[in-house]
Length: 171
Image (cartoon, rainbow, N blue to C red; front, side, top):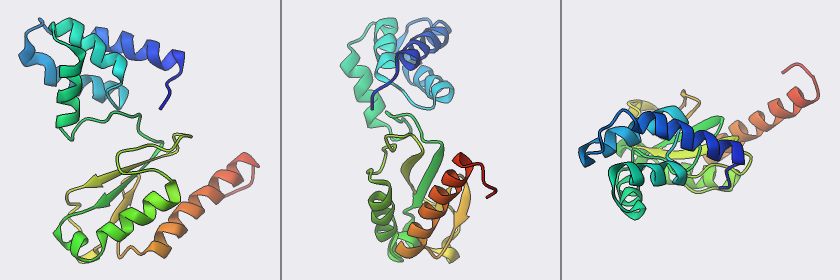
C-alpha cells in the first residue's frame, strides 16, 4: 500500500518522538514498536528504518520482529475493521467460509486493507460469543450466526449508507 508523502513524514516524526524515550538497548525494540503502532495504527517501513537506526541493527531484523509477532500490523487499518472469529466453535461452524466471504466482497486477504482504506480484515482467536458461532465483528459490533449472505448484506448496506452520505440523503 502506497503512503502519501504526508503519511511518510508523520511516520518518521512520530517514530522519532517515541524512539527518543528509549536508550537504544535492544530490549526496548518491542515496546517501542508497540507504541509506534498505538500511535500510527500500524508499523510502516519508515518506522522500522527509524527503529533500526536507533537500536543499531539492520532494518531486516526489525522487519523480522514485526512479522514474527502477530500483534503488529504492516498496513494502515481501515476506517471499518472487520474481524472474523476463528476460535474453536466458530471454526467448527464455518468460520473459514465466513472469512472467505469477506475476502471475496472486500477483495483483500486477511491482514490487508482495501485500497480505499475503508475496510481492513483480520482474523481473531476468540470473541467469546461461542453460542452465536460463527461470529464476525464490524467496528466492534458483534454479528452472530454469520452466513455468506449475511456478509454480503453487511457489506452492501455499508456501501449504500456511504452512497447516501455522498448524496446528502438521510441514512
